[in-house]
Length: 88
Image 1 (cartoon, one colour):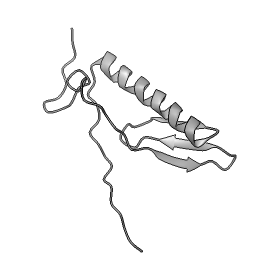
Image 2 (tube, rainbow, N blue to C red):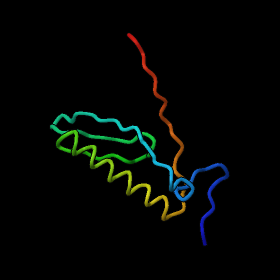
Image 3 (cartoon, rainbow, N blue to C red):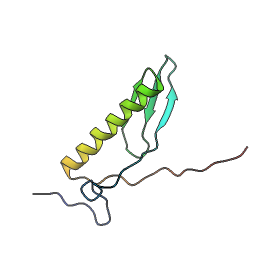
Image 4 (cartoon, rainbow, N blue to C red):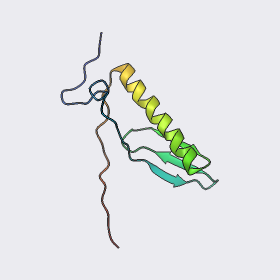
């Protein structure tokens, strides 16, 4: 039996034909390499020895996260990031 999602929530099936972009945060790790997280997807983070490797790894992590949401019938979290440029 399919799980019901709260009214107004977005599911992966409803978004299947809409490409998704996610902001990621890349941080240089003290021991070398990069740690990357996805603020809009709680708990999604990974690492890589190079920037390119870290970005490839986070792309895979995002895909796995979204597949799990779809398999469980859970909604995709609403964005939590707001971009702004500040001059100082």
